[in-house]
Amino acid sequence: MKYKLPLTLFLYFILYTSASQNLYNTDLKILIIDNSSGKGISNVNVRIKNSQKGASTSVNGYCEIKAVTFPVTLNISHIAYTDKEVVLNAPPPDKLIVYLQEETSLLDEVTVPYEIPATIIPREFLIIDFTICNSKLFVLGNYNNNHKQFKIIILDKYLDELALLKIPETISPCALYRDCLDNCHILSRDSAYQVIEIDTSWQICCDYEIDKFHAIMDNCQFQANNYIIFKQKNFGGYGQSFYGVHIKNNTILNFIENNDFKRLQELMYALQFIDPSKEYARRFEEEFMFKPFNDALLKFDDTLYHFNFSNGSIDFYSNESLQFIGKTTLDERITPSIWNDEILIDKTDNKAYLIFKKQLYEINTLTGKLTPKTQTKFAAKVLIDAGFLYYLTRTNNAFANPRTITRVKIN
Image 1 (cartoon, one colour):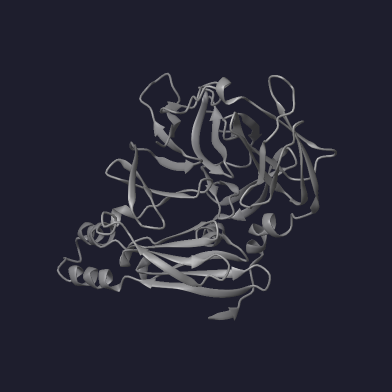
Image 2: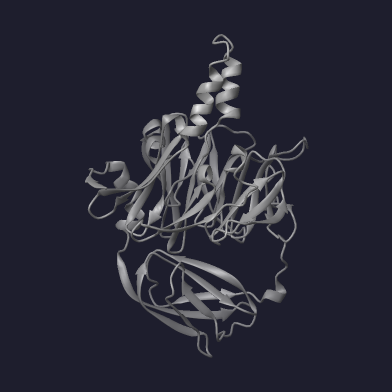
């Protein structure tokens, strides 16, 4: 079913990075150099992220990619060198020069659990929150508990510092937020602000009232081809639907309607036998015994995967048309419990995970089967990116940062 609905100004804002920044379309010349010898490297694979477009370097390290639209992200790889990702907001004046490090000369510090070193997150930097956007780590905090000087440390996937962003004293941040288009926002009690990258500098802009921000952003899922996908909950979460807003003509396409009215009926039946004065007993039934499933919708490559927990399946939809194309059965260990529906997404590697009985499992989105991975621990926040598990945990060490970020390689 399709019908017209004017997009809000706020929706236009979140579409800005994808709809209005395609300012350049030109040939991109690239030179790949060995960091140690200074010589060009042949047979380096250079690909535009999430596409098949790319080139391989010649014997002197040169290659060229035709008709590149900016901004662009390049994935650069060679069997003897460490992979590298380069983000370009605009064409370089002459050519892009990239230095690669030999794989054998780089110690892999993250093959075992470790805390991000104090030289990267200083001990005196008190961590409030963190998030990951476009494979960049954003860490919010302040130095020496100074509540008038909040900052954000921005790191790349190698934990090299990209920027130290000072937050204006007029903003009292309490959290960071990653939106559906992978942008980072600062949240305060009454407002939200976007963190943006302009060329090589980072800035804070766009003050939004916090309730309106959550009303739009909490329902926004991701961009699928020409649609921005949203989720809507009804009947206290027992009814869930997904719809797409077309970027060009603003029409809405509803493509998933799902409900779990059987669980809702069971809740209504159980509440009949509870004394209305015993609020704790009512909340126990509503929030624990008969809590509704939280369906998830993921986008990997050209397919959308709907985790339909109430029906015990993963349903497949086309990224282009949003039409149903098939389904598979979820692993039977997931479906019996409402506590197994928190899906962790690795957007970089296109993988889905869940934590079950202190064990991280990878979900095969094509078969619905679980594969055990890394053991987990209790944390205030858990995120996954590029094959790494990130924890935000508290420490009992009086001489250390009371909140610590730990990164673990997923085995």
